[in-house]
Length: 320
Image (tube, rainbow, N blue to C red):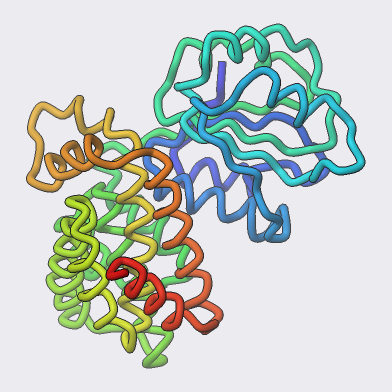
């Protein structure tokens, strides 16, 4: 079976998520897409030196594609690491093919991301194969919300006093998207003004950030793209808010791609219901393009690399 970890315990044991000198299969289930991104950033930025990924959805993967990518040598074939999302949607033929592999004699990293624990994930024969690693990162219990705030804050190099951490824990709890978005905004504000924020300033961020981001996310979910980009363009001079929103939107889109976690809730919030409605009107290919747009825009904002031009271009495209 896979090894189970809380996020902070996982990082204390697995510094870089992968073994840099051990290409092979890395299959994992992380309870939340933002936490997955936090962990996976260590792979992309440090272990794999920012290499491009060959990304596929589980439903798009075929046996022929796997054989070509992993077991066929070609002078014209790229050797980028492979990332397969939503592996719970792998076809029976692909599952049979993977189950029958005895060894992974390959010099590439291939990542299988599961958004839910499946029978295949739990019993995959690869668990016993060389160069195969299986992880399950579990959510914190409700009494561990303060530790969870610490975990996310440390990933953003934030040193918060106990009063602020307790406030965030009490008000945002284990709501990952809201908590990470708020911490990201605090981090960006700190970098701009060169000092840590006061308790009152943090309270103001929590109130303002939640409203603005959820208002825009609602427009996106409803495919009100003209309204969405018209309002988003007004943020062009507030790079901190815009960068934080780009990160928030990646998690938002991931939830639309797979709303199964929300469907299981006994009580659904207004935001949960919007996610479910959005999952019915958006196609997976559209969502992946949207996620790539916000990922690229976030990177350009970090580098201060013509991100306003990118935003304006998207703005004019939706009006053409």
